[in-house]
Length: 236
Length: 256
Image 1 (spheres, rainbow over the protein chains, first blue to last red):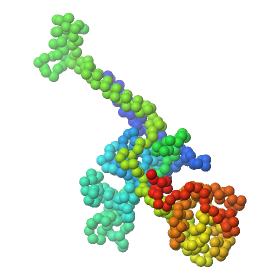
Image 2 (image 1 turned 135 degrees about the horizontal axis):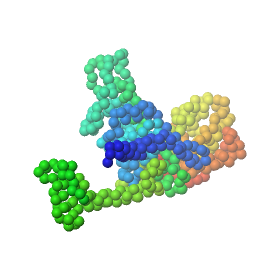
Image 3 (image 1 turned 180 degrees about the horizontal axis):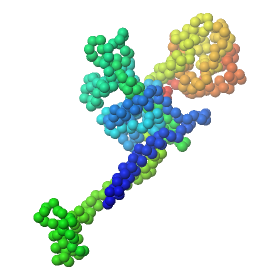
Image 4 (image 1 turned 90 degrees about the vertical axis):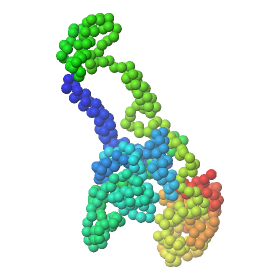
């Protein structure tokens, strides 16, 4: 085998895989076909899931810090595991107002981000509905942003997380002098007198993105796989 | 084959040159060369166990791909004809069931705070001058079709106690109201602020109220007190729901 053949074959082996797994999905994700929502009265509604928060910025910070290495963002269908019914992964099972909102992840859930960061492993919990979980459970009655800043600064702070393997992201925060009143976003951690810990802009973007992760809104019929919905004839 | 150059393929062990040894065997024992192929270093043929192992792997891979329904597809992110399985273990998913009275009232209280308490007050008493009180009003606590018509269409002129409040106009609140919403807010108003009719307006009854409202002669216009007393002093048709049975607070459906 000549050197040229070797180099060409090497490029082909990696190149075909790269095309198939990175390039084609990237371009397909950017041009998702809109799905019609079938309303009872025949209105021509289109499924446009809305997310509130700094999604593009925050997704970049999320990727830059390698969060996808330990956290997944994919709730798999039931033929591929029990993701749907693990506590609060697919949504809240007993939401007071909306009932059982758990559902699988679909491609529209990642709109606004460059890549669907579905993750590599689950060393940490799945984050698809992190925003929902924080507001309903972890930081119930408190400020969800403060809770999340606290988790990023020191993941092992609360007793039930003392064995968390999440690395600390202190470098996303800075310790500054308190000018006048303490900032609203200062973290409740011990620091020397007259100083406070506040998040830098990357941490703000990341927290805004993480709190926007609420992928449990109702979906159109073609993406709704609930048993009662499936009993009715599905439109394409 | 011609005898290879022993120096072209050096061996690690310098004392024995495999090529040379093979050359000797090949030239001296020609039968051996026919029966047993002697491979030079680095040119042994693929052993059978490697082929078998790869075959097994390919078989398993093909099974997985075939099981997936389609081969690798970018457009189908779910398997064809996928229906979600049921949750393992627990049979009850969703919120804790509540009595029908509490569930409908809870739903109604949210709609009331969104639509009604701006004028009628959070305690339902109005302000005596511009907005009538809902406490003890005969339109509210007597036959429920009266209340339904007022909510859905608004009312002009004097109200149940004969007085005219403010400009005498209540705007219709029925736009976009689903039967569940209407049933909830009617149940809430009829069972709070001091009213205690003790019954629940069911979703069926609310649906029939919407039908009645659409079938009015002057559909789309506000009702008046005379019209209500003349035509709508009836109980809404439709199966009622006992206030004590347990329902799912989100869907308002009875839980068996």
